Amino acid sequence: MVGAVSKGGKEGHVTEREAAAKAVRVMQQEFASDLARSVAAHVYGEMDLPDSAATPSGCLKEAAQPPVSR
Image 1: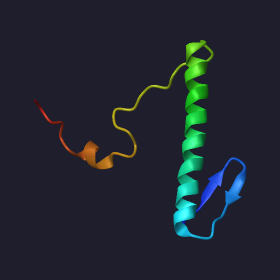
Image 2 (image 1 turned 120 degrees about the vertical axis):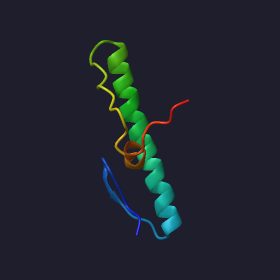
Image 3 (image 1 turned 30 degrees about the horizontal axis):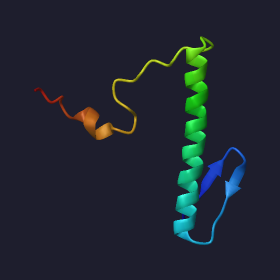
Image 4 (image 1 turned 45 degrees about the vertical axis):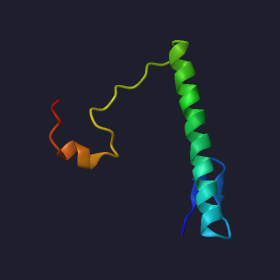
C-alpha cells in the first residue's frame, strides 16, 4: 500500500504505480516550496539557515563506519 499525506489532505489511487508516482510528485512539490521559502528568507535576512548536522539522519550506516582517509 502506498499513500501520501499532503498539506491539503489524504490522496488515494487505483494502482500502486499511480499512487507511488503521485506521492513522489507531491513530496517534490512540498520540498521545493519549503526550500525556496527558506532560501529566500535567508537571502533577505529574515531567517538564519539551521546548523548542518555532521551526518544526515538518513545515513546511519555511514555514521557507524570510520572516515575514509585519502
